[in-house]
Picture 1: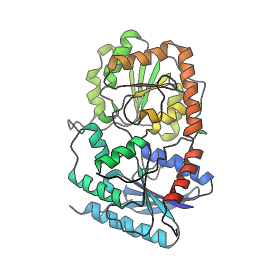
Picture 2: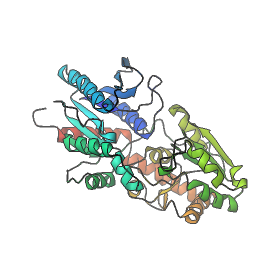
Picture 3: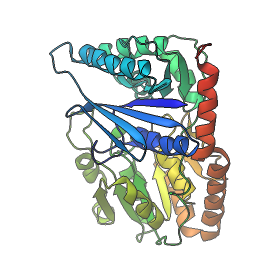
Picture 4: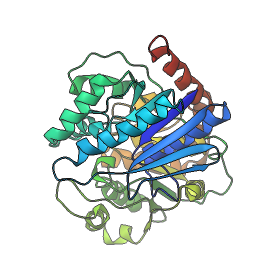
Length: 381
């Protein structure tokens, strides 16, 4: 198939930093290419328009239109013209589009649009119980109802998206996947290293993590907390730095054992995961987090949130631990159990790798996605 992806992020030097959605698409593109599919990637929100080809992938970057009050609409029309041109010239047969901010709400195209639900702003605001911009809801709901097919990365995200958009659309779950050739077990773990990687942001539980680590440090003063990822502003307080908000929440002694590395290139992330004894993800709002899959693929025990989507990845006490992010003492106890019980840690870690191999390898996910596209495509395509 000739498959296109529309995204606001993708890990490439010409495009900029990327979060979990970009890395999920990156892995998926590699998996689809390996199966012989032709890939085009359109990245909007870029500094300028450009096109280039690399490793057989055709890239288009799109600069957003800057007109007060009309920027989003005009940008969508610009994207529409590009999509229609690519579809008319038979460079793409189907386009995977995001749910975030409803970027295809006013895109009129004969090209089938498969909406991948990584989590819309409406979805995340509902999970976090915070105020939603009316325009985002309008655009996201319109785009949701207009999409040719709906493909959530978890059943929880599919159900919640139907709820928040007042819909009963059928959907087909295709999870995120992980490239097992890049994320594989390594024999370089260091003792007592607790790793969080991802954006430092409230919704991922970063304001709970200091309290959890304080409880860990009290019982195990040798434990170290390593944070890898970009800092973010806080939507509730307006602070420009969640990391700055976190620091006063640590005890003075625990803070001395915290190492905030900052963002690192995607290619270096495996090295940081490899050093970890355990990975922690006390998040409140996700769809199906790639970071969990990457840690488990590298045979690391994880202690993660027990909310919504979590049981679709982790079986509690078999291939990981699931704990409420606000249950600081319980969360700390699970981490300490892994740090202090190497036999248990090894058992959990091995089961985690087997889970990823059996359900979340990028080869299996890519094949499942193509089959889903073919099922959802209008007859005659």
